[in-house]
Image (cartoon, rainbow, N blue to C red; front, side, top):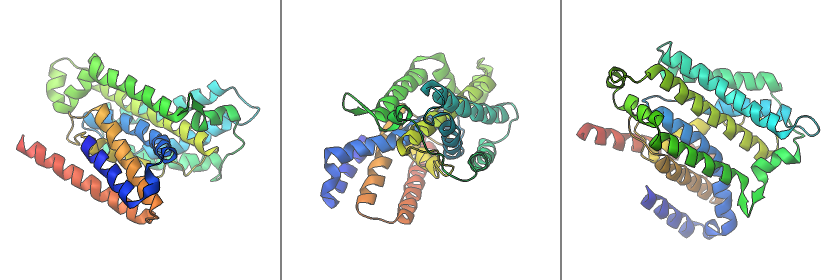
Length: 300
């Protein structure tokens, strides 16, 4: 995947000389930080043989709720942060409970949440943006620390924490075990229900944090925020080597996958390629990645 990323950067630079300048590179990483955070949560879900189609709508719901608490002269910054966490965790627990306890297919549950959360975002905001956000809150999406954009710092911290969770804890071993063979994991004593609920809760939490960062970056709560972000997040995970059949995936691979998506989006925007064609290209890339994964799985 790293070779593909380097090759893509070289191609975009050849086609659009302005692509490689430092400001644009920082802009790419700043923009992909939101997708990257969501994709990390989605990676946990996919490793357990699940799927999460609700992340984009959870971003929208978080965006309008957080904006209410982040307006100038209202609440301290921490209240807005806690609101983002609460929305994300609540939606994640709901998804996880129905999937693990209700034994309902992840596709159906998260598709329902995708529709419901988007509807709640529109209902809560009246279908209008919520502005007037404080400078302190906007710093989370627009500020810099030691020359590094804050969203990138948050993304890096989440990446490190997630890597440790997935690779250095029993929880991570259980996640892989469930994705590899759920029945075997259950026989081995893994509390599959609990782990699944925690996985979807974590994915919801990260979607909530991503929604907060996006809201701070665009300086308003948008009920239409996060549209199609679930596609980009799934694409980043799959391109990064996460298998849709479960049991396989890495945080590092997902980060590279998110960078590939970010580079592609930015490069195509600079070349004035229609957003419609961009969606077609993403769909084709996901299809090819899934096909390659299926071929590998079949050989094994």
